[in-house]
Image (cartoon, rainbow, N blue to C red; front, side, top):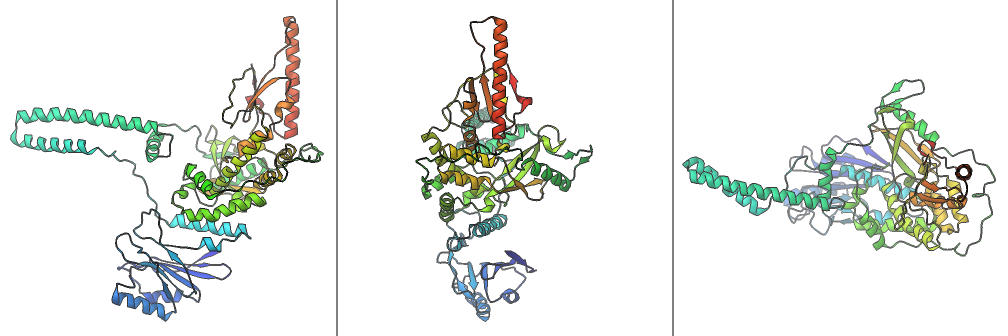
Length: 573
């Protein structure tokens, strides 16, 4: 637990950290113009304190000033801990360090790129990470990162800026400008004609340069380069959003609630009921109550993750600034030192080997968008789930291993092409859409079916731990609702959810084996043909019976899997 201690000194922050042994941390920025003295810090120092920051004093080079600081530290039995390398980017001085009355602390300089003119950090998490209590360690770690990202310098891109013009065009423009000033002084007609001629040439050069830059930006618009970021930041001003912002809820009485707190309460009540586990399950059920079959791969473990694979996966993730439930985003990965991924690697491998996930991995921040009107009922909103940024890395690592099991054992039917590379086929005639498909995923039935499919217990146990005991909160206009449980559905926005969904419905073609069907994720296209060689009227009756049988079999499958059909979007041609 972290508690802030009241301190009115400018540029001084005091916090108490409650660990196995309480620790007081005093952060200091001491410019030459400070209005306080070192003695003013004395009341905040206790028997277990660390005073760190920018003291603006080099203990080896600043003579009398350094002696005053050291004398103050000695009076409080504080020992200096100075890094080996210079901490300033402007000079070779060491002005960032720490004083402490703890036996020993370690300090290292920050080796990555930074917008600050100082380099300072402490080596802490590599030693205090405790895998015996994953929840406490992970919660402390993400809280530290959240506070750190809030404290770090934030850079804002300029709303308007000009592309750097090539040197040869800049030189030509300077020359023409000087020539234009000379023409105004001399009133020379020859110079005036020459200036006009040169201006036309430069204008064409600029037009060609900007055109080539636009062409280059179009080629790289789907990459992770800075040019792509710049391109979309300008292009989005001309793109109309497909969803409306949410301005209010219409309740059952017909009244409109538009205050953020009331809207959060209404949305939380609706989605808590929406994600509640279904009670309409007929037992015994073939997915969860049938005896388990003995497969030869039951002892296969989930392959371990290497550090190179983890770093490659992190590098491939598109970095976004949207925050998860703990105030973190994967944009932070750009600045996270590789040493952090070393102990996170142990966490991922521990999770795969023991099917244990930190509770914080299951926390979800949910934002709502209106499907049509900005004032509507909660049922007409689209929830956008923001998952834990570190858990999303773990999901991608698990996904590659889970897909390998599915493909090696041929568990996915060839007529399912959703979220699978190399599978495509046109279909016509009857189109079926499943209602809120991913959000209706039955957790217990999904795990039970995977076991019947022969997926190793190490994978099914991890998927069970990943699906169960999830929770979320609604956020509207920066106001948060209460936490509520999510007892069904796959985590929205997860890279793993689509593969789990199509695997769960891999046996659907067996129920529709006498018809030609094709699936794309949560959409089904089926072809039902009448018997040939008969009169047209008899063919129509036969086709009607076949369509009824198709719908009956499909409805039975949907009842079995707790996956309702969206009849409003289901059509037959």
